[in-house]
Image 1 (cartoon, rainbow, N blue to C red):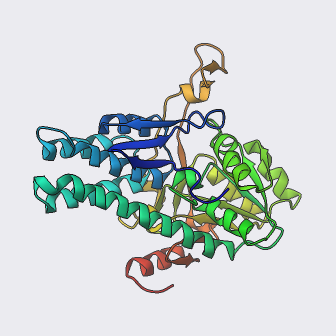
Image 2: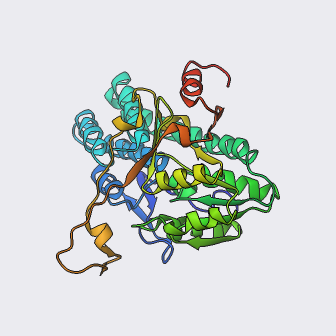
Length: 344
């Protein structure tokens, strides 16, 4: 598939356009929204997901708030507040909203809509370039013929174009490295089986879907050469929050001496959060565990616990791949260097 054949989020004809990820892979359906409240609902319901894509969707949602309202500045304030409550773990959301707020405060009301729209598109361009650089830098870590395991979805569906962790795999494939991908199902919403497999199939990359609990077995048989995952927030010390189940993979990878790589843009890093214990972990509805696509999977009256993310300690991470360079241990020093603008 050529890059650009699908977009997780877009802005056309004064509407936010989102590829409904809850319907994939059965239907490739695009939804159009004309209000920021609709965008907020789509983020909460994971019709759009992935930390960078959430940030872009929220930015375009703020743009909608500035259009065709009696008091656009007040509506923008309401949008900033409402969108900030949708997904607590993904720091990209808050970074995007902070940038939109700065623009809103710097221009007069007549310039509000075009200024906000320009800033949202600037974020898109930055993410596109970040994906490209992460892909190139990360592909250098992937040997020819490697069997790579990935969790959840960190492809174009989660960003805008190429993706982060999956962008590395796509780039390695395009370089002719002959990679093979083990795709964790990623319970309970199966973002791996539904979304990552969909992207890999479009790209023509060979893969096999496995249950989350099979990863250790494959590693013990030396069937995994590297683990590559994305991130929703990276703390100052290098602790990383990602889809639930990532920490388990990191522990298994450490036990079997398999390199564990994290791929994420700088917008996912949160130097204001010292360590993973301070990262807010979103808890979602128990129904996501107890049922799937409307079908009850557990006895009536069952309870469930549904944290959407877990935290991988920095000491289990071999490297973090960013558009500014590959950060190797000690991760906290590398993160500090990046935010000082130093070359790593």
